[in-house]
Length: 234
Image (tube, rainbow, N blue to C red; front, side):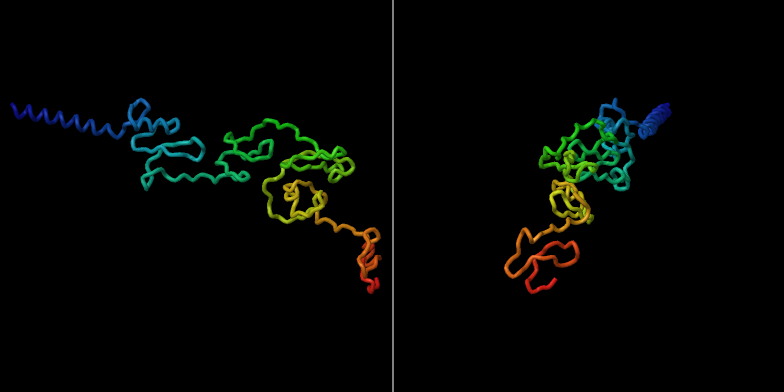
């Protein structure tokens, strides 16, 4: 009888062992399981990861997901879209590239730019000759006089921080040539006309001529009075 009793005890112990082994692989980590693994599950967004899973970072800010380990043992590679260039900074995927009231770029994690209205920019130009501060240029109204002529006025606009290298020459209100309109605005002036500035007309009847030269009309019609050597017959 002793050997029968021993056999039943052995089989009962074996059954308990097999039952415990069959339940181990289905254990789920939850926030109630007071262990270090449970703490990791809580930090993986709003989800609880299964045993053996990793908490991995997604593409967006604050995005996490549960995943089986990749071939290298870590989180799998996620094909995230490239960041968005916003002036001199980079925004994460899904962010919006916005500018503040001063014209400086910034990233909005809301996906949309804030709709807060900006205060009206100060006026400039006109008979009063109001000038803008060093960070702005006077953007004259195209309907008014160019560069403030005929009491033309404008508003102070931010000077561009960067410009492209596209060559589209303009003549600034300061009488200087610039590679494009953006370059003129960055230098603190508006555009007077497109193309290079016309050469200033010099009238030798008022400026006079050096010794050995005389003042006269020489060249195509409209060339004006210029200084020419005395031995040159126009």
